[in-house]
Structures are given as C-alpha cells and as structure tokens.
Length: 128
Image (cartoon, rainbow, N blue to C red):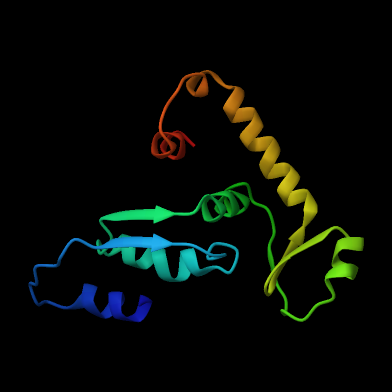
C-alpha cells in the first residue's frame, strides 16, 4: 500500500477517488505498521475516516511518550520474558514499565480539567 500511495501521489492523472474508510485491529502500532503503511495513506489523502481498536491507540502512545519497543522474534520463551518483566507482542518486545508509564500518563490526563465531563470516545481520542 505504501508503494502504491507514493506512485499514485506522484501521478499527474486527475482521478476522483471514492470515500475510503480504514478499519484497523491487531498489534499494528507496535509492529511499526502505523508509520510504514497507515501514515503514507493518510498523508496522501486516501483515508477519509479510521476506526481502530483501543489497543492500537494505547500502544501508539508508547511512541508518543518516547518509549522503546524492540524488534525480536516470535519464538521467545514467554516464561523467561515474564521473569524479566518483558512484554512480547508476537515479535515486538518492550519493558513492562512501558505499560505502567503509559497507564500513568492516561491517569494524569484523565484527572485534568478537560476530561472532567462526559464525552464520546472519539472526543476523548481527539483531546488526547
């Protein structure tokens, strides 16, 4: 998709595109698929709306907070990882502290003034 959007963006052909919705689930963000696939489509103007699971938005926060996620391999021993407080999402690993730090971030902002009212999930994500 990324290569297609780059080629299409450079094209001088005027084409009327249909409305394009994007529905994402699974561990896209930790695997780096947001920056490599989704962002080019959005920047090229191909995405009109997005529906995502909360997990993708939550894990995207790790990057926004400057937390490290590392490429690994899927066959690691989960018992050893747990003993070392390492979280694995398929072939991505990161320190358990990333989850705690992200939770702290959300607790802090949820206690702030803009969040002290009832609103939709979409507005919550916009405010974040």
